[in-house]
Amino acid sequence: MVPLLLVLLLALILFGAGFALKALWWIAVIVLVVWLLGFIIRPAATGGRRGRWYRW
Image (cartoon, one colour):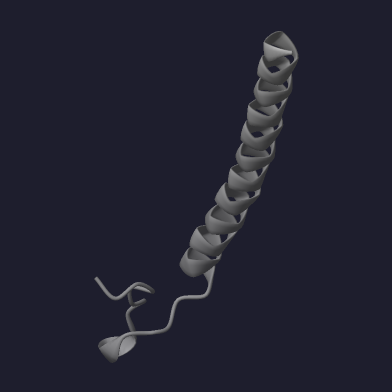
């Protein structure tokens, strides 16, 4: 009974880790696209220069 529970627990952990890693990859791709779009769609600063698209 104990080995069966250990195998099921291991499968649950591996499934959860796989799902989390896949979700993190999608989040990383979305952040990368937003970051790259920030360089293309920058508002003009005073004096006609291209401004920073981030606040800090």
